Length: 499
Image 1 (cartoon, rainbow, N blue to C red):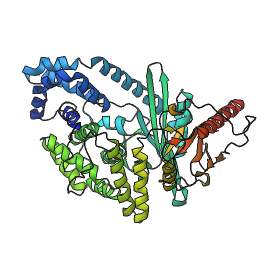
Image 2 (image 1 turned 120 degrees about the vertical axis):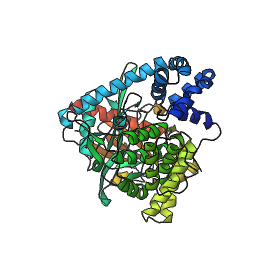
Image 3 (image 1 turned 60 degrees about the horizontal axis):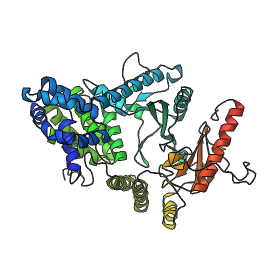
């Protein structure tokens, strides 16, 4: 199987592969220029594809190249096409400038010095482009090695006016009994009128998909970015591993992955393919690596890209690409399928046994088929049975494992907007509310009842834990009441609750 698009995805793939990937080969450049007339009657559909895949900046950049140095006969058409989304591209560029300024501010804070802060994903990958302007990012992804460093970054951002992004579902896990300290991802956002900036903080072990992780220190792959910057970057080998991990979370290989890899092939020659091969196999990342290698081979004739693709294919073990994997295909059911298959294979490779592997596959299938959307309702009988299948670890015993509680839902989540805070006690007191107990992680407390009424508090922000993103109205009301008490206590003390 080639991983090429089928059915309704053909048009999107054609747009992305032709006009939103980097122009390197003269033949592809001429083909893109000659085909511009096919887009003129489908501007709206083209714009929808580019927005979904965050590819407007690369599309605009490519059209700029065609308008200046493309085939003479098509330059005017390229210049006209570039005007279609010019205003939107300008807003995206303004957003990117805002994020760059926020990253510079964060890196310049004394509290960050020595914390092991690194940029990953978009801002890191843009370093490999000869011209980074088309590499757009919606947010700043940073990585820190441990919870203490993460908490320092969280406090800095809160002082600057950031709050937890209530529309996102973070995760916070640990396996102390297996020697694995806290790890996860938090999302913080600051809104200023129509502008916003968001920082995603990855900490500890780098998470993969719903409940797996890259089982090595990401710091192994740190490299300096510039002498005067207060953060590190991730080298090409680590970049590819993070890319494949993120592709699993998305359930497909994106056009940004293709462009990032082409940039690596053109600007860097220091990928450690031996280490890459070892980690790809150890983490069951072969399908996405093979798909990307074959896609680059199909699109490009440049010997540098072709040689890179062949080396990547060898690192992934060769063979046929998985029929489940696609380029550019944001399909929720396929996302669930690829994560379920990965969970099953990964569990078997770690000698967890077939029953554990099957349960992990079932967890991923349920988790992703919910489309990661929060539902406010009482669980039906099938949903209660599924929770019993998925919920294996009691948070109150501080056994946050990789297969426990994939998501935490903020009490301010939009799905819970219509729920008013309510106490379990008739007099509105705290009697009957879950008791939040301290954990070994500074500023983090857990409480509630197992399996489907557990809470995590980070400072005075309270999150409901859910394996299936279903929350009952009663549980939401109790959690909101508890959150209001948390905030009131913090205000009386005159300091954040995480102190």
